[in-house]
Amino acid sequence: MKKLLFLFVLISSAIVAQDGSFSLAVLQYRGGGDWYSNPTSVPNLAEFCREQLNMSIGETKYVEVGSPDLFNYPFVHMTGHGNVVFNANDRENLRLYLLGGGFLHIDDNYGMDAFVRNQLEQVFPEKELVEIPFDHPIYHQKYDFNTGLPKVHEHDGASPRGYGIFHEGRLVLFYSVESDLGDGWEDPAVHNDPEVIRLEALQMGANLVQYALVGEKTEITP
Image (cartoon, rainbow, N blue to C red):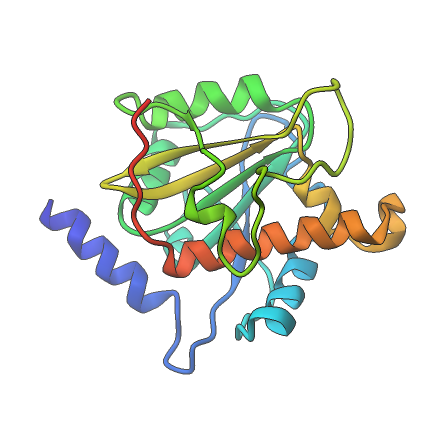
């Protein structure tokens, strides 16, 4: 408990500078999955948060899941279409980061679901990935999403779902499925999505970033 408290203080003090600035990061992982897909998405989300939430966000960074640099970022985004593999060091590092105050958003870009769920079970064998109800604060930060995640791209005809892992009442990991939020954050010319869809995706992304910084505790019991 003392170690986790120390990590929480360390993360909270290290990731936000005295002038209030910080950076968002993209998670690099092994296994062959394309962690580098959607290269313009997080930079565009950062720009949206600067303009709409008045956040002082620096250049987007890239960080390996097992690196100590992970603890430098309050919000880390993970995406891809395929396989995900964490080794023992990756799992321990990610676990300590999340339990110590960090926040991870995983966005299934279609094809990574089975792989990432398996890895999360190894990172948190004692916790369950639970669906987040629509009245949870993450859907009601700067912007209200009364019916949950926006639908950016169609894959299997399924409704978008948001799942999460909690620690001591705090949502430490948010997993978006059948939504493709990251695609909606990309430059308009990449997917030619309608502007209203792209705006909804950016607004939900801004909610995620805002929650990662100031979100209230709300425990969900499966």
